[in-house]
Structure formats: structure tokens, C-alpha cells
Image (cartoon, rainbow, N blue to C red; front, side):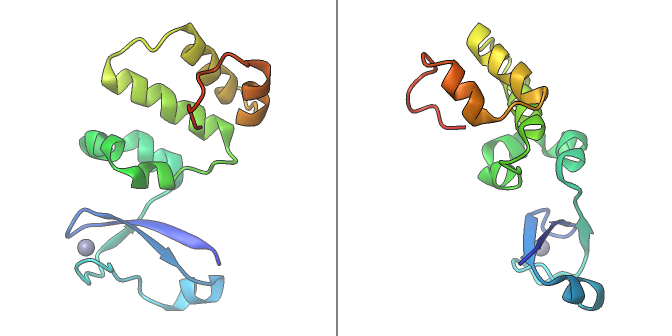
Length: 124
Ligand SMILES: [Zn+2]
């Protein structure tokens, strides 16, 4: 079933609602946390990049990760770059290379295979 991501304007939570395409057109999305109907549709990575006020929140919250499309290496790369920038840490050449390759559209699997030294347990 397709899902739609929203941000609740009342409780500020990110909300993911599962509904069919038909339902999307005719039902009013409701926040499962506070039952508000003031939900604003989030558009994937654009929302991720633009929501500056919620950036720390987004980093610490695995919903940010859950919202990522694992099959979209570019989004993943951008997210990882953003995270390292937010942390203000240089995570090393290896990390940078992985991010660069993700952003150029290479799949995480293929990167992993070509970099056998990549830290074990590092799960992309
Ligand atoms: Zn709410």
C-alpha cells in the first residue's frame, strides 16, 4: 500500500499514513498522535533539506531515516553528507568517498562490494 508523509502542524510530528491512491483523494488525513487534521504534505528529500528548524530533530529521530528511500542512493548520499555536516565532524576519506558515490547514483551494495575494508557493522 502506498504511503504519504506529512508533518503535523499542531504537534510537529512527522506522520506517515498508509492509504490507497483512491483514499488519498477522498479522505482527510488525520494525525494519529493528536488527531489534528492540520497535516502538511512532506515531499521526501526536499522537506528534509528545507526543514532547517527541525534539522536536529530530524537527525536524532529515526523517522528521518525511515523516510529515506533505501533504493535511492542519491537521497541516501545527501542525507549522509548532511548528517556529517550537522555533526561538524570529518568522518574521513572513506566516508566521503561513499557519500560521493551514493550521490552519483551508485547503489550501496555495489559500493560495499568495491570497498571490502568498509567498517563491518556499518549498515547503510
Ligand atoms: Zn499531531
